[in-house]
Length: 241
Length: 267
Image (cartoon, rainbow over all chains, first blue to last red; front, side):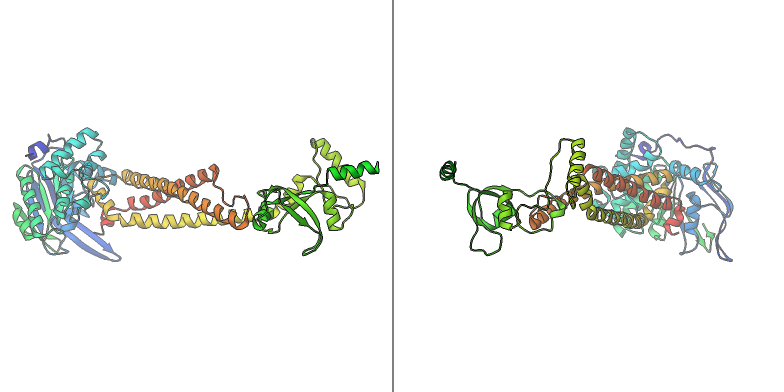
């Protein structure tokens, strides 16, 4: 069986070496609606270390997704800083942020978002192609990852030919394609039944056990319990950890 | 001499011949060699018995498309006799040996008597085809309006189709796929669709054209082609399709690529 040691190649990520993969300091995010300003995130400070497995939990509207957006470098904080592997990602412009996400962050979504016209293998190749990797390297890496998530026999299947759980496993493999520093997952079991959700949770545990840093935002109690750390949020702040 | 002439008439009886058009031959079941009676008035009891020596195929002349009369070609003297016109014609054609001869013939005919009018066949063709020029302009106007309407429709469809993918595109952007790649992939897909659409359109137009020609050639009994698909038309169609497809794809994808991914996700 393929292990994550095979999958996680030598760390080629750029940036200053740091003990913490993620450093969030006094993070805040405000949204303006006309005259009104909504504080979606207020003074959030935490670190995520190498090989950490963190679950961010809390009621709807507590700021979980806002935090995930900031950690995923798709949004900029109104105040405070986010550093990922030593890079201040809060002030990155679009092109720089896009490149940073490509090489350093793996996203897993609730609804998989696999390209329907591409096979499982081609979907995994997509971020690698964007990163400029050669076809042979992409295929070899894609096959390794598919084998790791237990879908080595399904590489030619299109998303419509895969079950929900299989699609999510392909999406996880795709997120790992460019050896990201962290894997960010937004409700990864939200679209799955208990059994297939359990398979995804087991896969996350195995990934983390093999060295992947994971931050997951979820309402799923089972998934949250599987994490090593739980950050509880309410009204835009961390209330318990 | 009168005796000789009488003998010649006995030995070579005058066999007058006519040519009829294929429409008359078909409707009246007449074949070459058949004897028919021709007269100057309908339902006449008397007339000349003639032999059908030729069946003439109609030319592909748009000016004659709506004319449903039958045509018979006969010797001039017999026609004059039957029509009671005597030594008189309304129109006749003269073949010439070149532009100089044409000019000379025109001048001589026009000067020969009051009321004579000679025209070049080219001038007559231009004069009689004015109606078709108007029809042609009308067709071009319809074509232009169709293309403009199609372009607007295509752009709307493209915007809607790309809009349907906003979350997929958002996911791609979150994964680190650049705006350039997103735009390029949408435009490439639009171009491919335009090419496939062009190929299907060409196939469909060939089928439609074949049917239209078959149907109207039958209705009007003419070899005229009512629908023509020429290489310039095909080239124009493919180029227009590509330009419109790529343009619509570009506009639609640029619109989405410029939107921040979290807005596309609706977060």
